[in-house]
Image 1 (cartoon, rainbow, N blue to C red):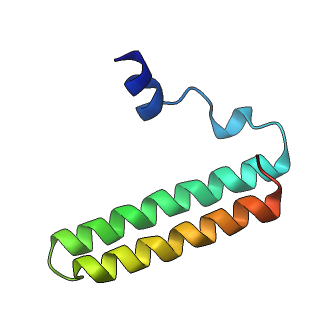
Image 2 (cartoon, one colour; image 1 turned 30 degrees about the vertical axis):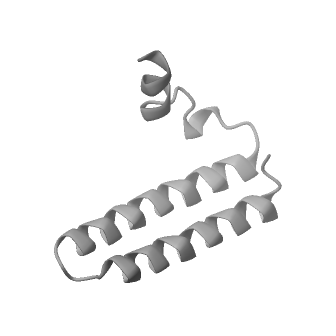
Length: 74
């Protein structure tokens, strides 16, 4: 249960980020999570198909991965 709790409620916050790149990535990650939530809600409500939702989330994931690489985050 402890590992699940650590995953769902991580102890690291944006305030504890050491480098400016980490702060930017944390903001990008929060935006990713918010958009995934919107997409999931639209799919659940029948406004998007499963395929459209998958493609949208996959695109967001690629953008997040690219930002991580560009920022030099390990």
